[in-house]
Length: 153
Image (tube, rainbow, N blue to C red; front, side, top):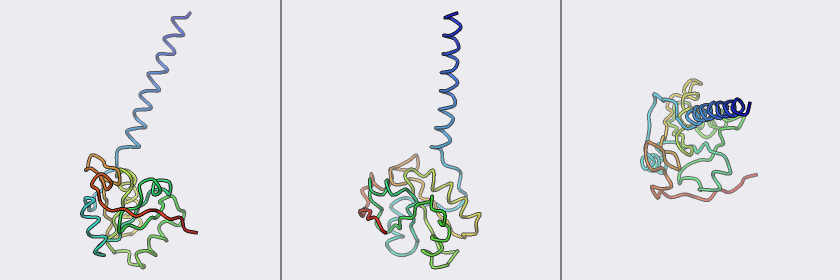
């Protein structure tokens, strides 16, 4: 009987590990985004030159931890009015170049696809993110300037 229990426990652990790995891959693997992409250095340069509207879509706790990339506008992607707030930052220009950055490029790719489908005409992904990914070292490790996040409100 104890052998049956041990086998059941081992089988349960194996299933949990497979499911956990699958969930991890889903959460950490960015969707393919057919639109444009910028490196963090390009995103920084274009944002500070006013050529692109750079949006940091991470959460406030993430902004507090690393700061916000110079030239970026913090806009939490979980906001119910995210699209409206983004349109406001773009001054109603749905074709304005808008670059999205998150921590590691996963959320930005997913959101870039959704915004493109919603009618934004020039969405650009920054797949390195703030912390780095397979696409590159990221904003922080590239030693690009950041500004401290200040709560509003």
